[in-house]
Length: 274
Ligand SMILES: NC(=O)c1ccc[n+]([C@@H]2O[C@H](COP(=O)([O-])OP(=O)(O)OC[C@H]3O[C@@H](n4cnc5c(N)ncnc54)[C@H](OP(=O)(O)O)[C@@H]3O)[C@@H](O)[C@H]2O)c1
Image (cartoon, rainbow, N blue to C red; front, side, top):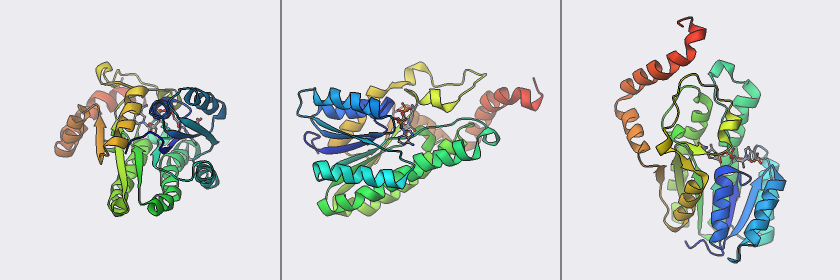
């Protein structure tokens, strides 16, 4: 599919990957629907897209993706303005990263499932009848390496992204006969606002090495290229494929190194081993 003139919904378009993705669709001359809660950020981006001179248009829809009525209104407003949905990028999401017993049961645990899982499921569910009627469409899911490999302090985030992985794989096999593609992107670390919402407090230096870090623009470009060439799974950067392979085939080794190089040093004070 050539993105030019296509109707593309990007959730979580107010910052980071979603913002970069929407901007990239604007450069390609798409009709971009920008959804998130921070409406002033969406409006600034909509003005930028409208002024690109590529024929792109932008529609701002303020939506809290944890609320079904906001999701229904997002789909309805898109149809009222543009009459169809060619691409849905389910990108909105956040992580709260801490030991499980320290996560707040409502804000951190339920909250992540509401946006990262139910938001994706319900938005897809609302857009799907439109795509089935069109006999065409493309659903792009912003998954994560955490949806393939579990890491300490990522329990809930990882559970959410594993859920998105399973949901999307099953869906891909349901909707293909209607001319609908489902692609999944699995980035490793990306420099965005994500970390500032995650509440990360690390003692060790166990973070993504710099050469493996991506910018939001890198991921945005990858998403737009998926519209031209759908892919069931796309791990970026590809080097993370090795981590996934190690985790699948040498689970005990990955347990051993993770526990000894991360969990125990991070837990030292609580364990009284310092
Ligand atoms: N950064 C990484 O290292 C990384 C790696 C792999 C995957 N990802 C995934 O990439 C996606 C985007 O994250 P990012 O890194 O770009 O982080 P970000 O800069 O914090 O952006 C998150 C976006 O999600 C939106 N959002 C959060 N809660 C929402 C809600 N209840 N309703 C509507 N929108 C909501 C935010 O908008 P408002 O606050 O305005 O609502 C914002 O636009 C997420 O799904 C994340 O899991 C990130």
